[in-house]
Length: 141
Ligand SMILES: [Zn+2]
Image (tube, rainbow, N blue to C red; front, top):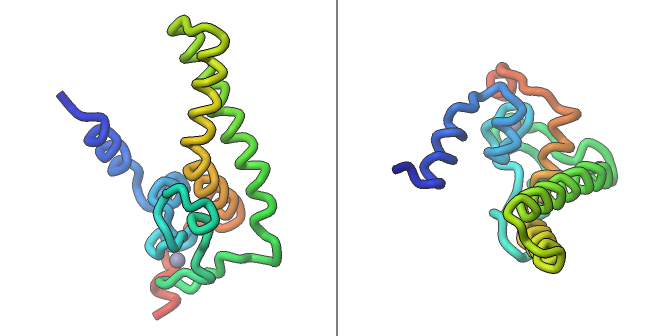
């Protein structure tokens, strides 16, 4: 039987370079899909996990397109948070939990999911504005 970890790894390998989902799920530069985007991995040090490199180490893409660029990521974060809350509500409701336990489940999932939502919202936001360029690495040589 496949473990959840293995199944996730196989699913991640099916997403190819050149797709925005690759950059988002692997947290790589939106232009070359090679350079790292975040300085730190997901953890509960909420002020550190949002720290980005200033530019891509591989292709030189600027990660701060303009001052206060990532304020817009709040809208993405809001959407992800609502989607997570609705998903947990529907699952909890279908399982047959009481309203109090549903509330606890939603609160816990939002607290535990907040580091992921913070990072995902930033990488999704920049992917809305920067597209993959297969020649990005060659141009930088
Ligand atoms: Zn890059």
